[in-house]
Length: 462
Ligand code: GAL
Image (cartoon, rainbow, N blue to C red; front, side):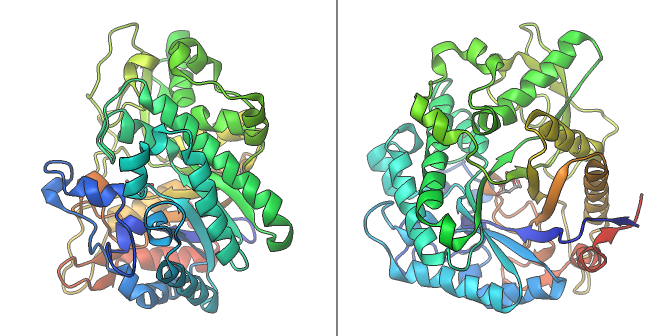
């Protein structure tokens, strides 16, 4: 048995747009994802999040599923346009009430709420009228929205996450255009990344100065990163893998933990990479009480020397030409329905890399999981591949802890099958199967497996 440390936080995660539905009910304003889904060709099969899992109306039923699994914690996000329909000024009482009820229900069932303030559903008005994350003013709007949430929910919420995956917002939203708001640019991602960091820092300052002393919670950020393994032990490939990790994770983590952008980015991007003022640097430095990490997969990295092979494997980890790195997968690696390779040892190496570079911060894996084409038979879903994935990755986490990583918790993505962004409803990540016609939930075999892991505070050795 591989046991986890005492008080390990066993959780599961979701996000507002992916599960709530009720897209224009109860005073909610439209988000950039509501708009993006209506653009032909952007989302597989023209799927959209109007109804999603209808969690807005089935919240208590969903908390009961969490309770049945014995979850210690549940990570969800607040929809900014449900709280502030146009992104600023006016606050929507019905939106506040929904999250009040959810938080109270969780606490009644003994489940700790972990709240993400921004999981990509920007109020549409801020995009249309203010240029979204391109506008430096957005840091002030985000701070005001965050303040409303701290003031209202902070008596009960003790773990806050400012932003989910700023890399995705910047690269997929403004670089590749595959996610809302769907822009294609070689320079905007770095401006957007910069403003996301500034917004994070201001929200954290607000929490620390106005709330933390009496509410006694913690606040952090969630960053995503795959592992990049050097393709060979040649020094050029070792350097390429390092560079790829810097453009992926250190882009956001270095300013927070080390006070500046990675030198590799400064050198390669020139004036496309904005600079922080001294005041912003000070605000950013140390602005996360814990390191939230979303991790899914691994690829090999090799120095491209100007011969980029873009698009041969899933993801290029950013704007490829800026990094000059070629990515590849071992053909023997198993792949999930997303085409992402299942490589548990990459998770262990990434945890070690973070611990080493940032001086062993407390880490929470705020997402890890996999999509498979689950099909119910006689009311049951026997998702053995998902169980194998979780077993592999949790064993890798265990090994990382033994080697010194301060990993304090793990959130399985996801509680429910849900709206998987540009892939729509076809890609199922849930521990619970959702029938998107009837909205019925069925616990998969993996939910039962996870429940046993939580009960035992450990998993069986490989
Ligand atoms: C993350 C994201 C989640 C979920 C997951 C699986 O990047 O935060 O919302 O979609 O990936 O693709």
